[in-house]
Image (cartoon, rainbow, N blue to C red; front, top):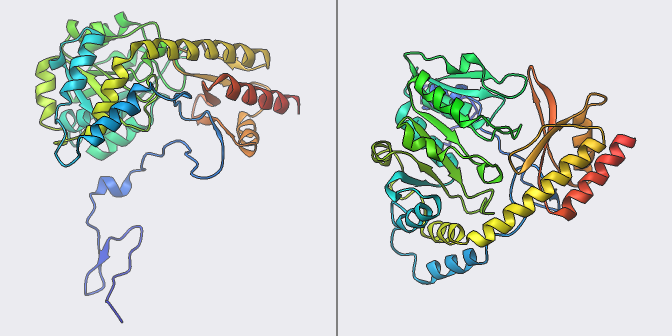
Length: 371
């Protein structure tokens, strides 16, 4: 039976009855490149050291809390403000709960901020190389993305501090990815005062660092900090993040977020995770110990390694292509992240896995260098 279906192409949403094309998507959506996540193989067994996940299961309190939340019934909407989490996180971090906004991962927080602050044709600034999602968020808003290159030692250049009338938001990952490097708090405070627009400090990896910008939020209302439970709490599969900002910012951002952007199970799991600080401290120390071992062994194998404040290391070589090294490891079902940045060259970002996983990775890297 002929249903009169209209053929669909990548560039054309539909065709009118007269045969002319019609496209219902905004021009920005047609023209932009979508965000591409790291490889997530769905079949087979891999050692995954490519997307900075925690190699260890979360606190046992997490699945227990999720089970209790499920058994209590899922027929009602969740708390739209994730109050239970905000209360416990506030105690742990020394922050008033009214200064916390929760989201479906820190990516949700980043989306809320760009939707609320950056309009069509306005400017969004971030450093380069850094998190590639920032560019996607700018494209979605029809905004102009200003990527300012780091200095050779991965610090902010003078250009990053320059204000402009149409600059609406600055995004600064700290620690940065892929480098794992830090910008000092004094430099960030100076940045917020000079650009005179909101500055979001993306602290996705800060729990593996010795420095946090949380105290700066009280000093300047333009400074905000977002975090995720994906890395240091082992909850990448749960999707929960949060923002810390002064109440005047939080109140306005609540207008922009989805009505129930965190479900009941994620709220329960995230609250149990941040409550178990003993698990967190033990897990953090294991990651730091393995990170130190990984960096030392990579240097012994002839790699240049940047000191990392995150749960990964960034390394490169001068004597051979690391792209071939990445491919050789992938053939052996070990995934690491290969990146090649214009003006910076290529490198490998290796997530900190278990000691056993890192031992396998290092042995393969040694074999490839020997070859």
